[in-house]
Length: 410
Image (cartoon, rainbow, N blue to C red; front, side, top):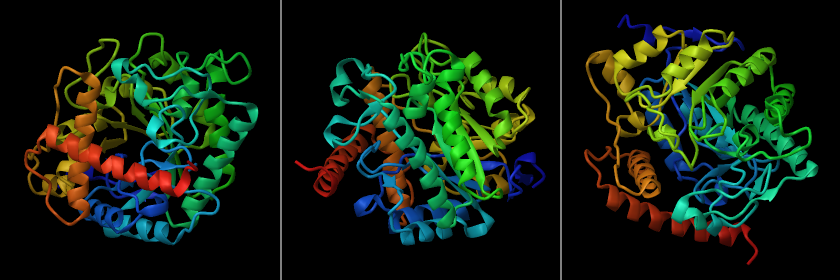
């Protein structure tokens, strides 16, 4: 097929990706005990690799097992056994696919029933309306906390390289810790880590410098950044432009642009400041503006399910088209496009009045599909949101019990 989507791209690190389609990160909640990758994750990633994407970005891998986004997540630290991570990397590399590990710290976005560390630049709790009780008030980070987390990112990146991954993506979006430093809504600090955009971006810059110093030059280092928080007074497109400009001298392989947070889930097509997002390729308008001046490759993720839309992304001077939910529903979507360019992928939408429950149900539908694929089954044609949410909550409760038994001293 002669679509530009299926042309290769050589990244600044020298690594060549066979096409422009990327499996973007999704939270799978499929970790084995001790927050390690198990056989289900390996089967899922092998399925995606065989499905035809050029690059796979893993779901969140945490730099601290005491700060998790969910009880079924993976953590990689200094003392972690690398054996299952090596198997995971190998599984994802089938069919000449490259694999990048997304590494993250949730900051204040840790569910209260998990226990563990809940840190943030400032002690500002999540505002989830009537669901705010699900998250505790975070502790404002000390200088020692900040240095510890910066070091953890570098250690996890080094371990990912040892395990055979082709690179890492630093998660600085979706309201997680680095995003909390970037946003004036969550960063009220008056020291060198807060105030101006240069100070708010300092934490990200220090993480990137230490990561780059701890890995080989031919190892992919990338960043996931919000194009905006989509909250009034938050991190906005002007801030994103400035941060991308600051990233120019750090030898990055690509910057992935997304948007939103738990409070404003723009990554599901919903905003809190009433800005309208496109029905497909949600963040392309913002990405096109940033790509106009950026020197490193830009990737955009959010809502892509048709080949012409992926081509539209590339036509906007954006080099990589990221897909997440569409690949949960149709893991071999790139292969299908090779055979039939008019094939349309599926992205489920839940439109309940309660936006928080609607967001949780959407994620539950996706995770249910991932679990089926991980077990070697086909995705459901039309999974029930309510059934998916109940199954997800029951599964999460069991995983939380397992997590607390392993790590939380009662």
